[in-house]
Amino acid sequence: MIRAAVGTNNIDCCARICHSPTAWGMQQTFGTGAATNSTEDIYHADLFMVIGANPTNAHPVTGAKIKQQVMKGKKLIVLDPITTELAKLADYHIKLRPGTMWLY
Image (cartoon, rainbow, N blue to C red; front, side, top):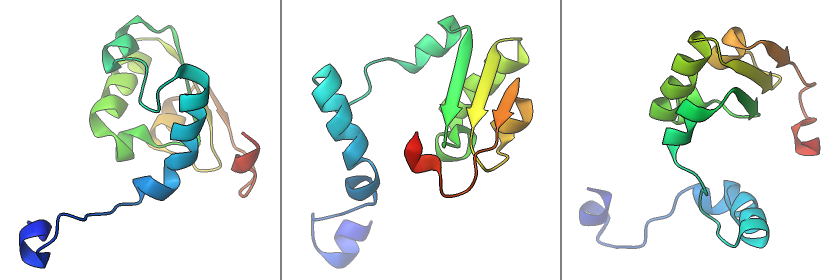
């Protein structure tokens, strides 16, 4: 819709800025800047660790899958200054001081 209205194929988004350090690190470590696993792996995990992310808000399908597994008894650790929906369900919610997330 925006391409037609503005008349350009040059569309930008925040991923270029906020995800580029992560993609670079993954490229250096794993040889690809993309995810190395499938969301189906969620069903095979015994423990989830969510660090400074809000999957139920930012990635609703993935967040719902994690939430389902936690409600079935899988363990969850959340490191985040914010009490997210998943943090409320976590076995451990480590509330980091605001401004210190860059350490992790």
